[in-house]
Image (cartoon, rainbow, N blue to C red):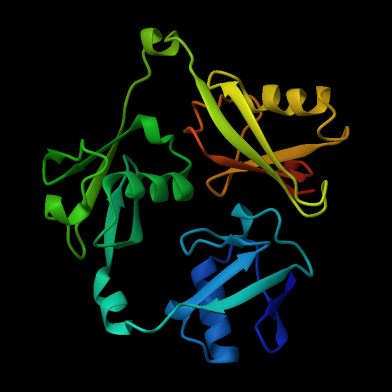
Length: 253
């Protein structure tokens, strides 16, 4: 598909494929525009495109979509470069590489894994060199994690007792796209055991949204109608984005 890259002074078109990663698109832009891929920030409607994802992860990017190109501040270029490192995350059947900051915490690493793999954050146990990373707010560097380190992801078994644990209320914000209600911001409080479909029906019943098909996005991943807010890792203060459309095997409609 053909998209528009918009800079502060001009715009240009590039062709992108559904399975092209954001990193690959940045390299294309570097060849055309000259801006180093590492310095680029790509956003759609203020929503940053993450390097580890591809266009299939962004159903709002369609033919003719305008993608804003901004440049990262370069006042401390050497510091920013030194602060980055690439690590390997190992699952039971595959490995992926993720770029992180040395100042990242265990929690922020889990969030990046969730964005790329959709693994619920609460089911993750991360292990490095036989040591469980069990303190979410400790920095990766405090565990001795460095360039090329390998982190193993184990999935916690969901027991019957855990499934039946009492639900709790979470305060969240629903942000509509610019094509809906002029980009409205809607604060809500719901039980974390409620499903995405429950949320959708609540918004429809209160006539906050007109009757239509919608999809919800949390932490840059499409949410599943039949799964709970807890399953998606929704926490107090999180923002959910809503767009018109549905998702099928052929993509976003």
